[in-house]
Length: 128
Image 1 (tube, rainbow, N blue to C red):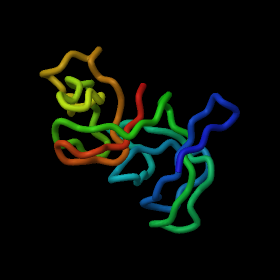
Image 2 (tube, rainbow, N blue to C red):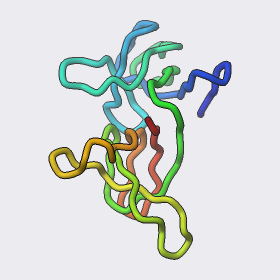
Image 3 (tube, rainbow, N blue to C red):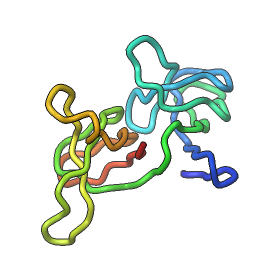
Image 4 (cartoon, helix red, strand yellow):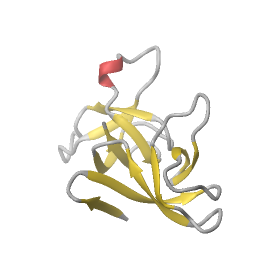
């Protein structure tokens, strides 16, 4: 479920891998799942409404600007960065592909994947 708070802050319901406190910084750890950020992790957002137990849902204020469900051209996993890919040749829909560190230019990094998908599937992503 996607929520917009005061037209400025984007929040999302996520599964919590552990019990976390309000305002803790979190990272994506699996499809639609978050846990406390640590060394080397990608900060995704902060806890707005904590889950009461591990494996339950809570609400995260995300550090990204827009949420979209979008078609993929490559396999993409939760917490992978993505780049825009060529539009679908049949429908003209926008598509994305996994952004590859050391291969793709940093400025091509469009956002982060929240719910992964296989090639030609539909992923849930957040744009920077």
